[in-house]
Image 1 (cartoon, rainbow, N blue to C red):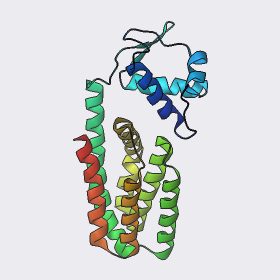
Image 2: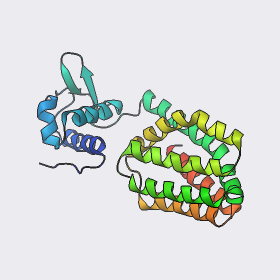
Image 3: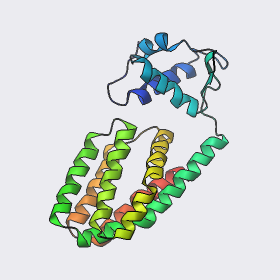
Image 4: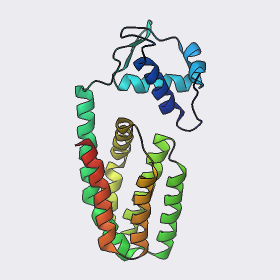
Length: 222
């Protein structure tokens, strides 16, 4: 029996469960075993198994019927209205982030202090240590980008960033779930390059790298 690694347990459990569904262990309309049976099969606790079911329900693979149990509704994620609306919201957030963060990166490269650069380095290292769990990854990623806006010394930009931060967090989590992968070396390397541009007082490079990073996210979903 395949078990999951300790990081990102719910996501990994969801993928293992999805694989079993696609392999035909349960047909459409079939009922999954209860949490007490399913959890040890996945090598996780009941709460994690419950979260894995919720993730697949969000993709349209499973449905929970009150008092009856969990049933398979599809063997592949459907392209439905929920997904379409989810993508639209993510794209809108990325556009808003681009409007604020590209200019903020340029200003940060010009205006950042030595102390702010040290904090940015700490935030980047923290981001690198939290690439296994979606929520932790997004939280540390946003902390890094917020510090760039802080280093821009533009109170209005910071107000704008903080204003849509909760929506941005949810949208980024949704985006990574749609992508199915996140936190790879290429992605983290891009953030290292943004940091280096700011450290080197290179506004043009900081803006260019930030725009390219956000454009790549946009194009992936567009």
